Length: 385
Image (cartoon, rainbow, N blue to C red; front, side, top):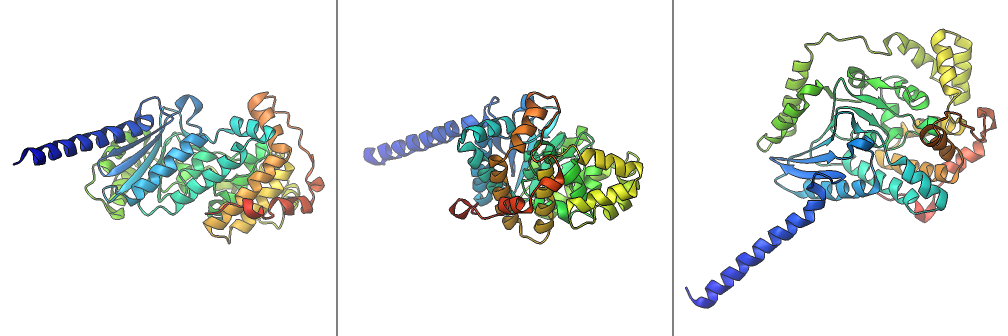
């Protein structure tokens, strides 16, 4: 072998080593233990770990961007057969979005109030249209932004520690991240009930309601993940088989009745209405302790959010997922322009006095023309998927 050929081969090896080092360094911000989101390739799986346990893994714009870019890479990578997403720590999968930052941005007109919702919904849509199996281990608190990261994927695995809720009407917002798509598709009127009241589902009830696809004991989650990532070139059926096996292990515990079982008939009847006002009338007319409790809860919520949410779910029931995200982006920006979101965040998250002063204060004062304007096109600023 000539000296020139040998030198060329050595240069090529050096370049290859440098490329590997550069690639490693470029991933270091995503894999170091203090990163906000960890993105790792383990066996046949891409694994996303939301890594803000002290903030209950709340989602911020940086995390959204990192997850989206990596998802797109894994979708095209022939050696990645599935994606697993989970939360770090003992308490939460993801308790929502970084509401405080969005609030501050909205008050000052910072672009974050637009970019966060826009890019979050684009990520949610990428999950909903992902070409490969996507497994969300919702082992802990799962609210708001955490719902968007999980519910649109093929598999959602709940545990006894799962706490699922969409409490947005209580802070002057609406159940976004595709809530207008999946909530009206739950059995009966459960989705509308959850959306308006912010009712919390726990453990097995998350699966019974149709939100989770599987239930696995929390102590088995690590073992489940290990078995999933070590599957050799798995098909969707292979993944289903593993999930089913773990669910059967967890079925040894005696099932409790669904938390809403005794109220389902009332929910389906009383929440079958043409308007929020009609729901209030139904509850008042019924007069049962359950109905009175729901009235008490609903009277604490933002009247504007209630009317916005009712229409969101009514229209979303017949929309594609993409059209729902376009609609919800319009609603998000209407909330950023309004009053109740800032008041709700103040009362619930900042001052924590729970003394919300909604404007308007009563349902009857929320003009239909105003609600219409919330759903109106943003023209060139509309969400494009």
